[in-house]
Amino acid sequence: MSLRLPKLVEFFNACMSEQGGSLPLAAIRVASWYSPVTLTRLLSSTQDQVRMSAAWGLGLIGHEPHHEILGRLLRDPVRGVRSAADEARRSILCRTQSPWHRRCAEKVEDLLACSDLPSACALADQLVEETELRSDAFLLRAWVRFCNVQLELAIEDCKKTLAIDPFCYRACVALGQCYWHQSLDAAARECFYESVRLYPDWEPAYAALRMLQTSRTLA
Image 1 (spheres, helix red, strand yellow):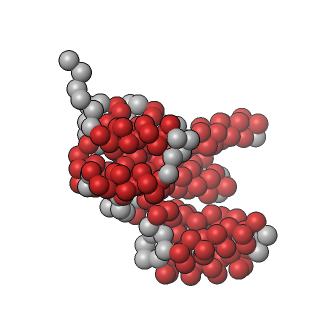
Image 2 (image 1 turned 60 degrees about the vertical axis):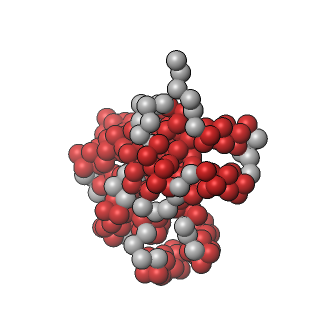
Image 3 (image 1 turned 135 degrees about the vertical axis):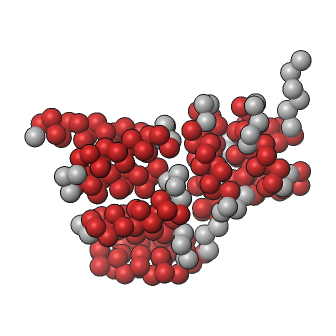
């Protein structure tokens, strides 16, 4: 006899079938039936649909402390669950940003696009100082510093990002890129493999490994 699926799965399927659905309405539906504690418990379900739906639900109503437990699902055997966990982690980070944080991050990216590196660096420093140990702020500054060829400082920020969020596979690739530019191939390779281990679906990690192999073969 098949197990009865919770109402959460119905909410998830309804939102997906509505071409993205109304996320505010979906959040209200989820919050009216489930607490973040219950959703966290459902992440351990033996049913793929339930784990996927619980990850999606936490993306809607979860908080920063749920980032870590969702990070463990990035290695789930089911790709749909991994994708839901990844999206939920991004959603929580975005939703918990203050309006100022969001505007500041967008401005940093605009300055990078205009190659105004001194202004981007100054604003990224301010962002890190004002956001009280947020991994996304450190990762953005790492990218700014990398673009400004401040590799040691970029490495420092990548490591700080991973200290806050050990499941940040993007920071692993960024750290590996820094090491590669310092001709530290073994360290770079280790970072790229760690990214793959954390989240097997992150194609840039595989591309980085191929780049590393190709570049040294041609050298």
